[in-house]
Image (cartoon, rainbow, N blue to C red; front, side, top):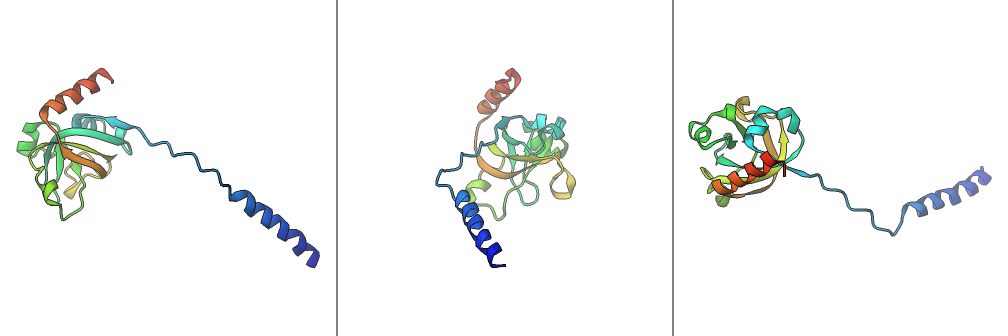
Length: 150
């Protein structure tokens, strides 16, 4: 038994020494962000499921009803069939509440199976990393880039 221990100890030390390299690990490749429209997400939710997305759209902010809409008209009529749920932590900071009714730029992960409060929406954007005011002009420019495949 002593011979086995004396042989096992150097092997364990060698294995541990080999695992503790001082070289830094290569950086993780960040997933690309897809620039899409709400209409793209609504019409092909499975295509974007799990993807990081960037969207500029009219936004409605309220408890259990925050959403991004395909058009201003859809936002005004609260047409959930033309919207995706925007999952935000509550209570909201005042600067996020101030985005209600405005065009916003949002980056986050799209999940087609999450359909918001009472399952009304066509998917959800979760893990939001960016949420800021935008403009309808920026929306038009983004739509042009999407259509041109840029």
